[in-house]
Image (cartoon, rainbow, N blue to C red; front, side, top):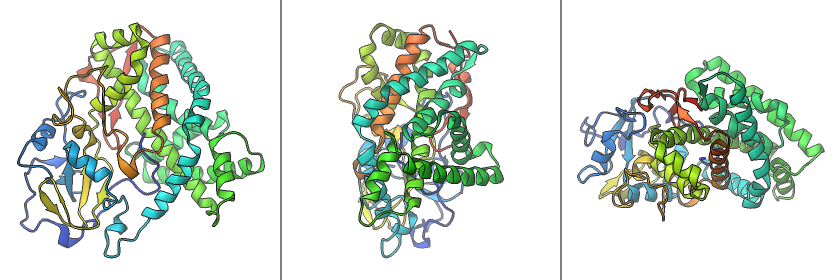
Length: 412
């Protein structure tokens, strides 16, 4: 689960200052457009290993979606440095001459959320998360086979958890799922539908906040209201709405994508699923290893360098758009022994799936709890779970930040 975002996630056209673009008309180490494709849906693109090798540490490639140049970081050391360095903000305006922008505002929002999304709150929510998981499996068992693990479980599970976390009435959870899909999975929705979903969501969140203020409960939004009402200066109401919207994005798309991909990885080699069936204590390290092993080929979150910086043995100019390929960094031979081997007992496991430094995912405790519970529920209820198609036939879904599968047909 990535941290909440309040800005558009695509790299804006014209974001690269003219003085930051390559002047020779050719990208360094040309390897084609970015992101890369792969021959097998569960395997990484071959280009990752080539980029991690000596001689081409931080190439300037062409982004498929916009045609803009982007510096791509694939090594663990470089990706970690970028993710934890404040000179790589997420807001393009902060790469300007005075370094101003929305960064400080974003950090204030993160601090507010961190005060409320605590490990204690996540632990208290755990029984509710378990109930949500079992209800989804109930519906799967009552429905047709093969079932679609993505649509029937992975997609609705996290957004229902977010609804419960924010105190949203259960009958409205499916509306949340629709709005989230329309806003953050734009490959399947037209511009008009996306605009309407945004307006409907913001209106709903404003109304929900007013209801919660008049009748607070034990949910995260009630606590946020309590904290912000006591703050000096008090943040505007719009801040709370944006935090809720950001939490929906960060807590839905990323977590649902991971669930929809980690289960096929386990089922692709039946011995992996069986090992977890035999020893549930392995779920915790297995989740960390599956996060490391993920071959997410989404474009990633762009960051904009605020000053010239030496990285990977060369100077990256101020204003450059950069992207860290976390999934490649998590397979860096310099950091992980036998990185292409899925080791369900791997420890330590210092993967970068939740970022690093000041930009590390503020909701990672919730994300981990959801992943642990999702696996535990599926193992408990559907021990005979199996892919209904060969893994090579799983179709990657394009157009979303984290990438996922179109469908995950399963039987049991």
